[in-house]
Length: 562
Image 1: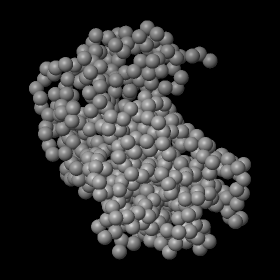
Image 2: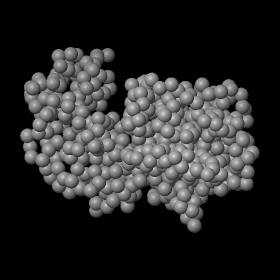
Image 3: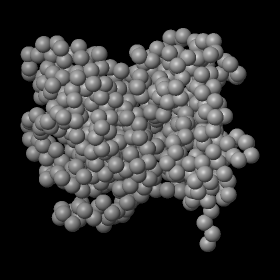
């Protein structure tokens, strides 16, 4: 079999199934600049930053050109450098340049490439607009003056999430990215997943920053600040401080929060363990009664919102269990209710949609929300920097009691398939370590967008599906409604890969996803308690605080709008 090669900058590079020249070039150790290319999205080829030149002087867009054996490509000629600098200058001429106060400062692709190519002045007139940012959403902020029309957000919203809340509007110099009729984003079918912000290379779409409110609560001597940290956060933060991608740094996060001045720090895995027990019981009851199946999980607020907007007939099939964040918040508010101080419950989440969930009417009692503040992993990183904490050097600290005990079952909630695996560990009749390990090989693990598993429960085959990415969820629902597929239990995560790739996390793909997933499974392996029912803190709650209040504190009925 003949092996095909390309010649890239006078160096032969093997072609081994790459779909475009860009992939071959990157395999050769050359990082071509791009704005509009993501391997998960369709090829758009709009930014032209990845142009290359062949030996005849022809120019190609590397992201949209398939490789061919014998091609001779140059990536860094004077002509190409001139092209790229001109493109950057044109983008900057139509771009708001308040870089020092921008949410994406030091994390902006346009800023990075302008510095990389040594652009110190722009030859073209400043044509940037200065509109009011769209702050209508509790999750994200849109700023048209910082948009470079790369289309990443549009393709993510349409192709991966199947929401279509934004698109290109107008033509020529008036072209912009906007919701239909330039409505505020909160008035659209946006579900708050934030994946548009995750792929935006500039500050055109960013996560809404609520850190100022939290700093104010921390500095208030009459407020007890109680923080819960979601499972995925511990593996999403380390790389930003020079540590390995996916390494679990929960102890360091606890220590950093304590130095900032918070009073108590807990792990949302306690809420996850409660979710496992409540959701498993709900599922078994529905199976016995043969009603409202399949049962859809309710942990992901973006999925819940997507179902409400697009498939309201399925809302009764969504579990009545609150999400782990809301369960634990309700417990914390109840536990600290007798204190004379005001209690502020803070949730550190990998997810932007949790900001929307926190302000839902269902989770506000007499004007008081169960969760007072939601900050994302990205916001926590900003706070750590602002506090001057040298994160890699800080000594890890333990979680506070009485909710300091955690289980591996709760930890793996952060990755797609983790909720299902935790539930299977609980409902399995065989509680041996061998049976638990065998569950991992039933199809629940892996980062595929759609996974299936089958188990036998009381002599009946139970068919399970796990989906991540709302487009995958939508396709699955259509197959259910057409009768092509039948399931009893369906886990849905809006973000591809699960919470490890939530929009509130620092962006990653490919190997980064695998590292974060591996980090959670490693934390599970190192946990002495593998099943939710083994958590003594949870058992204590059922025997005490939750008696007579289980449904009130742990459940919600999305189908009943009252």
